[in-house]
Length: 192
Image 1 (tube, helix red, strand yellow):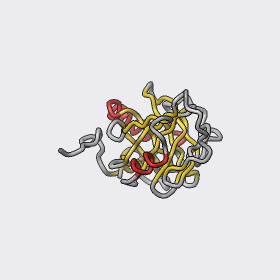
Image 2 (cartoon, rainbow, N blue to C red; image 1 turned 180 degrees about the vertical axis):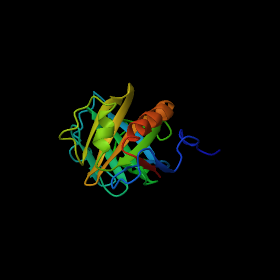
Image 3 (cartoon, rainbow, N blue to C red; image 1 turned 60 degrees about the vertical axis):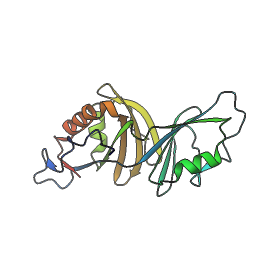
Image 4 (cartoon, helix red, strand yellow; image 1 turned 90 degrees about the vertical axis):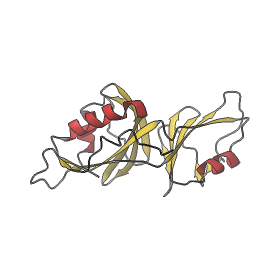
């Protein structure tokens, strides 16, 4: 059986919107074939997270992200993290470093749609549908919010150039994609 992206028949490559004679447009791509795990520390657990590592990364504190070339760990709430990785051995790394008695692990790999937006106008696009104050949210931070009433997680990957990943439930993938691309039309965008 083949895994099919929620945007398989929606995401079309090319230039769209007001892209003529513009030096700066927004790049949009769908992130596929990536592993996503949710880690939750049990309330009864007394273990300290300070020395725990997954793929040589610490579990981050409030609104922060730990990252290396293959893996990003996003803080999702108190004692709750999202591990996003290209490393096919990430589940093994998690299971070796975290005890079943202290943590719950859930595979969310096929339950999310991820859009990556890049360019100096990314914040302007997000402001069109997201109530979050983006000031001070830069590289290495993350936040939960909404975009046109769709619950999202935003991972701020890079400040220069501005690059973010927007996560939503797979069932809202099409609606999120149309909302984001519609917000990009004014500036022009390249879908990769």
